[in-house]
Amino acid sequence: MTSSAAHRQIEAIFRIESAKVIAAVARMVRDVGLAEEVAQDALVAALERWPESGVPDNPGAWLTATAKHRAIDLLRRGQKLERKQEEVGQEMDARWAAAAPDLETALDENVGDDLLRLVLIACHPVLSTEARVALTLRLLGSLTTDEIARAFLVPEPTIAQRIVRAKRTLAEKRVPFEVPRGPGLAERLASVLEVLYLIFNEGYSATAGEDWVRPGLCEDALRLGRVLAELVPPEREVHGLVALLEIQASRLRARIGPSGEPVLLLDQDRARWDQILIRRGLAALERAAALGGEPGSYFLQASIAACHARARTAGETDWPRIAALYELLTRIAPSPVVELNRAVAFGMAFGPAAGLELVSDVTAAEHAGRKANEGIQYDENDIHVVDDQKQAGLGAYQEQRDRAQERQKGAQNVEPGGRPVVGQEGEQGCTHRRDDQDRPYHQRAGVGHGRSPRNRSSA
Image (tube, rainbow, N blue to C red):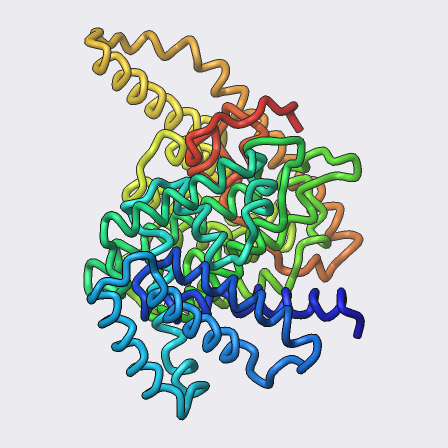
């Protein structure tokens, strides 16, 4: 093997093992920044030694041991050799000596808890959303600063500063490297799920740049979601999010046409949907349902996705069930965008008039809220100026439904067996932007990232 090939192999191994190495060291030093620094030192040592000695039988254990030794050295050689640091070094020496006889077993026993601690630290609510996203991709996704910057189309120094500030904030706030229990864990997991959701959505429907999708970000979010589901198997919403992401990701290839143009849900070639991801998504949804309890936002969105997944053709979509699921979603995650999606689902299920009635209610409530905030008396006649726009939007979806039903009749004559089971999250979307139809509900019309979506042409 050439030197360059050996280096590529080592770097690939490090990408797989780095999160575990950082998590294991952080548990000992209680400092995420230092843990990442010594993990990088371990990579340098591997690049120097492994090409000659060969890759160890357990490269993760080797990298972790090297990083821990390096951490102890750094603590001892610090500029301020205070007594406290010496005591910490001695304590770590003692821990290390106790673990050394059976290093690999110890690593395997602790890796799950360590990874969960690292996930919760990277997504701690004390950090801004942008900082949580960057730190998660850096520590857990093993992406370089340059890779994160290119993924989000921002300057590399900007990402570097976010990561540096995030580490500094965690240190200054003395955030404990531990797994909270009870309600505290649920609250922290909600922050983690939000970060994974945002990462996936930025890949699924990019808010900047020329590309509509960035599959790499979707893959990173999905991989981290699967890891999280293994770390906290009793958490229903974690499995719900994984189910949603699996089914969303199944359609990435079909969302873009030959010339790079977006393809709306009802016009997509369902034969291009990834059946393996769909099956995994439906299986994750079943695991979530089996756990019982009150349904959460991600579980409901995944259930909507399953309705599309189980439709053999677009015309067979169970819109009444989707409408009922949106009814539940509006109760636990109310927003104008969710209400509009619910209205479109009702329009598809029961006709445009049913949807228009709900749209008028949403428009009136939103308009009244704005006027109340401005101290202006509400006049219900004010909403009539947007009725034509809303009717046009629902009419477009009715037209799509009719087209799909016509295609279904033709397909029944040609393909009696129908196409494979496929699916996607409730994407009937809000009525005021056709290009928003293919986004998860929270990101449509600029919701979610705090950035306005690009002015794209209609599909």
